[in-house]
Image 1 (cartoon, rainbow, N blue to C red):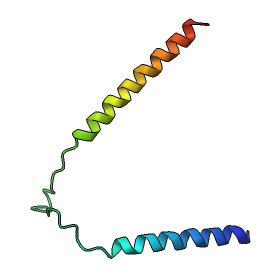
Image 2: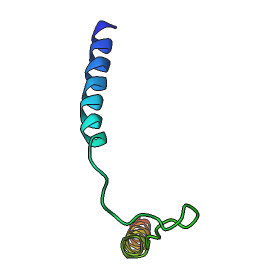
Image 3: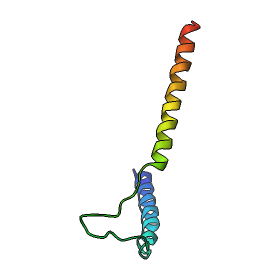
Image 4: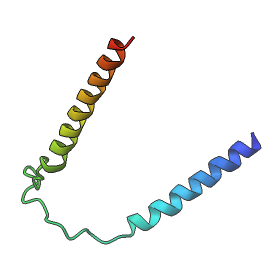
Length: 73
């Protein structure tokens, strides 16, 4: 139990020491939203479409591999 508490204390100290410098950073300097109701828009098409295409390709590969393994038995 004592070693568990020591490990938990070390983990908490590490988290605090990691988070505090991040909170001290100045503003990002990025664009501010024009109004609170209309925040800055960010396109979600470049990386997501590549991840989706990679997931589909991986799925097709797995299906083909299972069909080949089932046919050879």
